[in-house]
Image 1 (cartoon, rainbow, N blue to C red):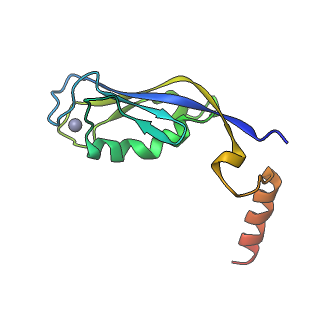
Image 2 (cartoon, rainbow, N blue to C red):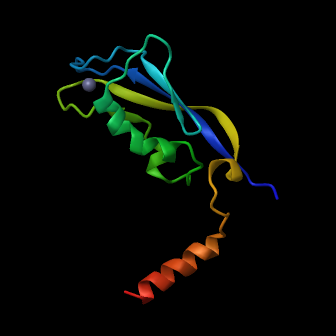
Length: 125
Ligand SMILES: [Zn+2]
């Protein structure tokens, strides 16, 4: 059975704004997202506070989204320090084909299984 699926590879890059940056960011600093991995170029650093703010968004940006989903249109994220002018631009830079069987030991479930399970959970509440 073909268990392939596709994710986008991402580039997350520091861009400026009209406010000065107060953290250690440098315009042009970046990291890549390839599958489950974050790839940092050599001799580069990245603020752990900014990384913490960005991490929840990355799996969603890797995936196909509904054309009306705000997660698709919004790609510039502010630094979590309210006094810092840094922004981080998330760009899709390509696609990567992965196999379900190489990412998990769980079996592939149909969409209907999730609906049935949700219904059962509500009935048991
Ligand atoms: Zn900052």
